[in-house]
Each structure stands twice: as structure tokens, then as C-alpha cells.
Image (tube, rainbow, N blue to C red; front, top):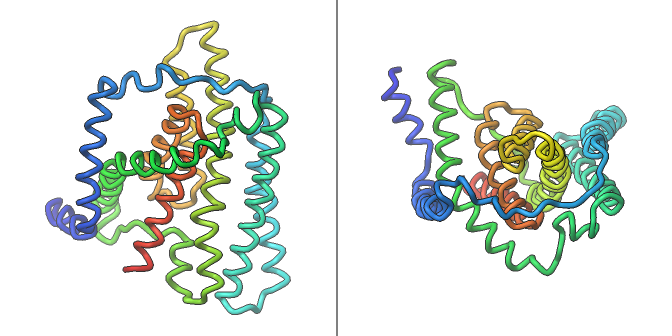
Length: 292
């Protein structure tokens, strides 16, 4: 298979709605680039989030999420080894959901103890919900062409390097929701993917890790001038966010998405905005899979 055949096959994989959405997003992205001098100065007025977090604080919820929840999954599977597959998936997702909620509770405790203005200083203010909801939709639409381009290039290089059989594997939750029609399992996955997951991941990766990294660069900047610390914090936290997801084939798309999430957090000062963007992205993926 030559390069042109590969490109044609990948083109068939990208749907017409993706192309239409990408064209609309390209207009918004072009407007943003023109408005911000090709993206060089959009965060010049980004206010820092005052906090006294020790450097290890973000690691506490991360260890709870990846350590304690994984241990709970192993214990549950050992005690319930003979369940039907859909019930086993239901238990797994229930534990993940409960573990995520408990981890969020820990994050809230840590934030209240270390952020000036507590949750409002963290970026959680219910008064901005209506504004962040609409802005999140616009932000996601703006980067949609970049997400499609990242997916296209991942498939292209994957097929060139590993052969024409290379494909992007579906997320485990998307596999589960298509494999089993049972309503309780599907409802739980939808709640976890659209509500619980985005809230936890944004609180952890944007709220805690990105804030911590930015704070470290601000201290560094007071001694030795370095590149814009805000953008560096976004880049590093975005890389971390992408790499904690198991499927490496998804990393380029997730990294682009995370850049948008991090930028929207710094630009707006609201953590609700990246939460809504993340929720919209996951919701679109679920709707696409269920309608395919």
C-alpha cells in the first residue's frame, strides 16, 4: 500500500460531520490567531492563583486514584470471579465512579487548606456556570480541526511505520458501552464519562498539577527570567494528562485537547470551563459510538 492509498483510507475514516465541524472550527481558530498575534500574547493578563501548596500535594490524589482504586478493583474481582461479563463491567465502573468521587473529596480538602479564597481561588464558582458553558462549546469547536489533524497524522504515521493494519483502538469505556446493551451499565458509564471523570481529571491535572507547575515557574522567574511560565505549565501538565491514559495512540489527540483545557483555565480563571470542554468532548465520543 502506497502513501496515497493510505491517505485515501484514512480519509474514508473521517466522517462528513467531522469535516463540517472542522470547517466551522477553523474559522474560529483563525479569528483567535489573528486576535492574539498568532497566539503569542493571549495569556499576558492571566492572573496567578495564589496558593501555598507543598509540591507533593497533587501526588496525593493521584496516588489515591491510581493506587487505591486499582487495589479495590483487584479485590472486588477476586471476590466476584464468576459474574457475567456485563455485571463485572458494572462493578468495575461503580468502583471507578466511587473512587473518583472520594478522590475529588480529597482534592477539595487539600484545596480549601492551601488556596487563597479556597474553592473560588481554585476556579470553582457557580456564578460563572452559564458563561463557561457557552464558552466551552466555542473553545472545543475552535480546536476541533486540530484534533482531527492530530488523529489523521497519528493514523498516517502509524500505517506507514507499522503497516496498513494499524488503527486507533477505542477507549475501553467506549468498547464496553457498545458491547453490552444493559441500561444500568450504560447509564453508569455515561455518568462517569460525562460528569465524574471530567470533574476529577480537571481538578487534578489543571487545578492542582498545572497550578503547582505554574507556581514553581513563577518562583523561578523571580530569580532567572525564563520563557512564559504559564505556557510551560500548560505544556507539561498536558503531557502528563496524555501519558496517564493507557493507549499511546490517543496521546497526540489528548495532548491537543489538554492544551485547550489548560489554556481555557488560565484565560478564564475558571475550572468550570475546562470541565465543560472535557464533558462535551466525551459526550461527543459516546454519541458517535452509540449512533455508529
